Length: 472
Image (cartoon, rainbow, N blue to C red):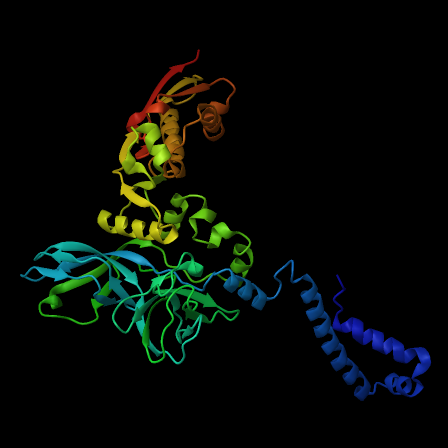
């Protein structure tokens, strides 16, 4: 790799060349501080330093994405698009009137900063009662495009937002009212099938792209109208508890409705920064939603619909290890989950959509999750100076943090508790067990062969039994 020279190095080299005797007239002018010499040399040195920098970057670019435009170009080539992520909140609806009212999905609310929130699930609000709805922060805009020529890979530009919002997603509709399906890189697409793909360039300009004539996908004809339905979000938006929201327009009786934000369901996010893109594009599992890269559908669903309290996805082989074989299990994915903030039917619909988008060869069956407490027995032998009740409480708190309902261990599922590691962890975190006299042992009373994939297993306070004795 060549050396990247600085401005001062070029400038000093030019001064030294003049002073070494081959340019006596210039040397004399330089000696008296003639700025017509030094300024010209400084300008040329600056230009040469900039050129040296570009040459140096170009030499390392094949191995290290050094320039921002190369990072963006690489991200665009890999399909990493500048999508934002919309915030989702639970909201309370209070009906202070004397008549029962209904709030339908799709109604738009405005927060105290004028941002638009859309009701995701309808609700009935009885008189003088409170109901809950789910709201998502986004605004929908439509662009109608008239096709100007019939060609392969015809593309329609998606305008960049003029405000501080970010693209959330795109839907494409034909003038006959039917929608196109999104297909990643035109995988397994038949001729004339109404699908589209999304591409971007190094400036993160986005286009909706159609298929290849006589080979794959639909080719729009001249004069056809294609509508792009785009959704934009402000990204990382936070509502404090009980922030008031107002209906964008009011129908009869709705003046008695009051809306207040409640718990956060999904945090919003801005698109990846340049620094994040520089690293993310090195790891397909971080940016590619293909289940082949992710290795399993658990990761795919977690990325798209998190957070889950519990999620497990398994195939027919795992199913038939715990239950009898059946022809109904062929090419089937089994899904079991526990998730708050959304209706189960809505979650099931979204899970099917996500799995089908990744691999539409699978059938999806849902199995009700079953919560199972893991029985743990702890035996303590304590030195006389220790408070027995206090140590027991510390043990319970530590076990719940490690293996309780809210723990990462429980959420991952399918794991076993290693009693040796648990004993080691208890010793490291409870100071009373570090005196060289006190002792602890752990026994997990769980039969692994009876474990079912739909079981949400965790340690509860009721399943922990602690016995103790004082050493003399």
